Length: 196
Image (cartoon, rainbow, N blue to C red; front, top):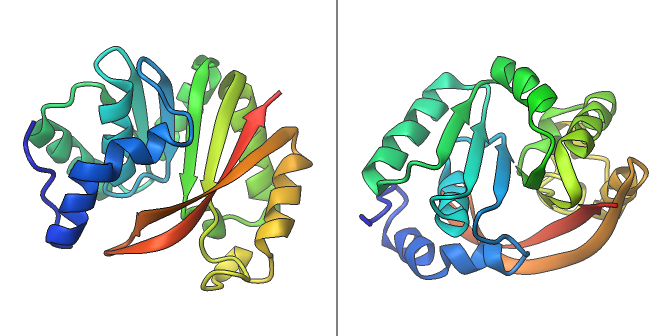
C-alpha cells in the first residue's frame, strides 16, 4: 500500500503509517465493521478507518463539500482502498434511513457547526443507525475547554458529554491520544459513547 501523501509533512505521514491503525483499534474499531465518518473533510480518518476494517468492512465518508469528497476519492484510489464510499449531505438522509447496523460513527471536530437542536437531531439519527452496542466516537474540538468557536464556545466538554447522554447514549470512556487536527498533530481526547 502506498504512502498516504498529504501536504502537512513527514511527521504526519509517519504518524499515519505507524500509529494510524492503532489509533482506532484502541477505541474498539475492528475488522469487518461498518463505519460512518460524519464531516470527514479530506478523509484522513475515513482512510485510517478503512485500513482498520479491511476489505470486508465499509466506511461511509460523509461531507457537505463535494470538493472534499473528490479528494477522498482520489486518496482512496492512491491507497488502493475499495471499502470507502463517499456520501454527500443529501445522500446521507437516504443512507440514514437505509443503514441500521453501523458499528462506529465518528464525529471529529464537527459538532461546533451545529446548534443544540440540530445536534440533538443528529444524535437521534445516529442512534437509529447504530447497531446494538454500536459506538459514537467524538472529538469535541472548539468547546469552552478547547479553542472555543461557534456553537460550542459556551459549552464545556462535561456539558457536551451530558447532552449526548441525555440523548440515549451511555458514556464509556475518554481516550487520550495524539491525533491530527487540521495541519498538525496535537493531544486530543476522544469521547466514546455506546448505544444501549
